[in-house]
View 1 (tube, helix red, strand yellow):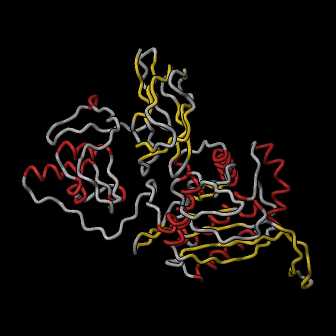
View 2 (cartoon, rainbow, N blue to C red; view 1 turned 180 degrees about the vertical axis):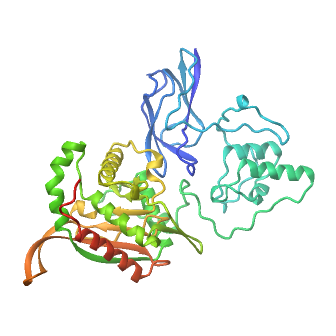
View 3 (cartoon, helix red, strand yellow; view 1 turned 180 degrees about the horizontal axis):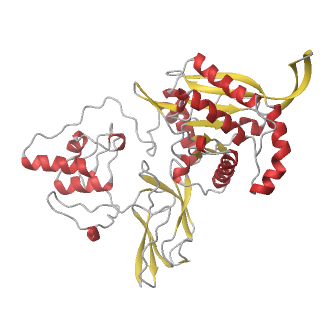
Length: 448
């Protein structure tokens, strides 16, 4: 018999921890290889963790709602054979074993470092929100580096984090007596998305409010809290402006009605209006590239890849934004399949972490629920988001060879929210008008 460690899987480059939502197994239960053992959640996506071996659950090391670092052992499985964990999309990256400078570690000596609270006795300043991995903390403890000294080490990792290389260079310089690099004083630091910000005074006071009369208090679930935090941060980050336009999409509606049965029979997928909206947006983003960018400080990063996020409502009432990568390289069929696959994966909690990352522009279809228009909030770090309203039949004045006449047309409103820091009203309105033209000039005779 052997014990196989089940570890918290790696969920993406920027994700350092995950929350355990639900255990599907308890100690003593049998489990098959690849059978779901627990559900976990990050600030990006909810997903399932499968078993890496067949056997019996011997021990569960964390409870539901615990926040666990990536790579930490969360359970142990007693297997009847020496089973090596198989590579799966959620397989974690092996943690590095620390050795003092000058010592080499062979590949076969690299082992997982079990998660344990840091042994550093110096209290971390309450004003600091800098993140340190368990490996960095273990090295600091081994080398006698205080937390105050650790705060001074400049980090080269994501969001200024101290990496193994950074702390080893610091240790080496300290031993040789060389001048040690110092971190620049930080006047303001934004915590990574995976860390919970301390409650604001408004939140604290709201929590203390007592209600009289007939009222029900509902606790926000984890995803709703993250959405709320993300939306508030977006409004605080970007100067939002929203422009509106009306489009005659009669040709598009008639074309879809004409080909939808043949399309479903041939491709095995239903075609909605969303892929057609995405096609129009992609064409316009190629012309107006500033709408496909992000802002970092005083720099504008124009993205060459066009990755379209599509806001998707979940059965719980929450919202998630899966991303169609390289949408400009897909035809109508390809975009349709991507839209349907990602929407189905979102509704069944099958999205992978990478399915929600890397978006450069977002579309939200508020018309699905009957809204004529909306004022969408920008999905950071993007600079624009398009809302498509409900398609309604309306009497409209149209120009004909015989003069103006009134006709019944399929009309819809489009609303574009954009970041006024870099996109002025002229560019935002021009981009929106270009999308309207693409939709109104839809070729009703085009092939599938």
